Length: 606
Image 1: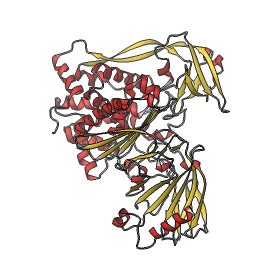
Image 2: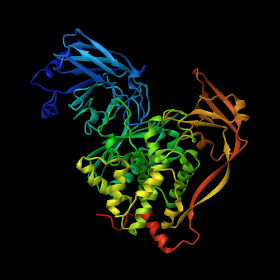
Image 3: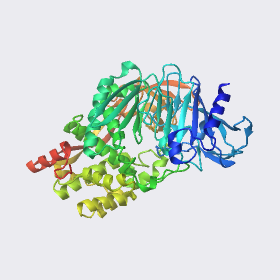
Image 4: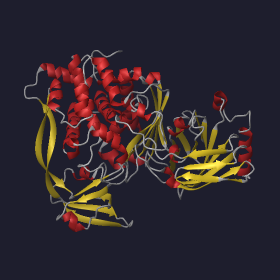
């Protein structure tokens, strides 16, 4: 009877001349309404009903193959079945056009599309329903009408367990609500939902309201401490940008015990996952990922390359400028941590040294440019692509390009301008006018408009090309240089690569080593290293150990079985790059450094 009653209500709402909410009335277009039934949390099953208004008899419905992260993930792999019914309950014809597109006929009087989805993908990039909570990335589970992607959308949750609440940027003041409304599909899928018995906190800062929602074991975090860190970050970044394009903002945090790592930015929210171990042992990771995802509020969500607007959910969306949209976001994020008092100069330079070491010790930095790395982002899901000989990271090289660009601007303007002025210019010229910049050329044009200088050679050599970055040439402005050391480090005897927050997978094993004799196999998944999840990496887990120490590794093999392996760590020599003071540091260089790290440039607008 409940389903019959629901269909009756929807029939009334979707009848000509009536609408389900005021957003539909304002738009003049029939809205699309979804009902998500939490059908079986133990088996991770949800059922989706799409209420289709009267209109064309035949319509096509698309499930995205990707969203947000630059990987084709084929979300239709989680759809277990799909069917359609008329408003009277009779069956309608459904034809599958391709792996993610369905054609439904007989909809002239409206109808209901119904399908079941497996929701067991944890992390900020997935959709997960368990007996403990639900996290919903709508792009992974909601089909959209090809002819009406821009109409108002709403989602209603049903069979929500007793005591569960909802957190969503589209419903900032109604935590007990079970429904969200969006202007269109793009806004809807850019607004993830957390359901459960989460803990939360909120605060006000310079006119904005921030809500922090945490799904984790209570003993694994201190929400008051997290709030204080978040407050410092958002205060510093909004001040840095002289802008706050929202009234309410939502942070969703997950701290699982055995895995985790990564974040996903949204227009008015961020979803972030860190393992409880990382949160406890490396608190800097929390601050860094929060600063990065929050700055995406501007860089990529609003200051956006033309190639990514509008989003095409059906195929790869190629852009050459992820080095800027992602990498330089990290540049600013680290700057902000210093200016917020969450990193000191020594810690910042140590992290900068590590970034330089990461790039310089990847052989591919001589063969793949920052732009090419951006284009090839869609290959990152393949372990072979992620090998050091094959690719560089647009995050890593982009961060370094952001630093040297900043120093180049400061030197050319005698500290009258900086990377900050570039972002203020881009925000004013593009974001606030609803426009998009033209790839790397748009960034270069903005730099030259600001400085009056020619950045053609810089972009040709270091952005589009693979010439070695002359670090000392840029760092000397602030009295720094790079020295190279050869260092012996413990060696696990294998190399593993991870795709976002998934467990790392073994991609190579050194021959004639203790590792090879242990029985480790290429393709094995590394679950635990010395009893803990290998986050952020296997290398990080063995850092500080000594050659000859016993290493304990738990793996999952290709057939799904698990086993424990043990062997002694080996040793290998590697190069380490360190940012240090120049030999004769001048007062002028000291002054430049202080302006670089601790305050905005003197010529910054107020």
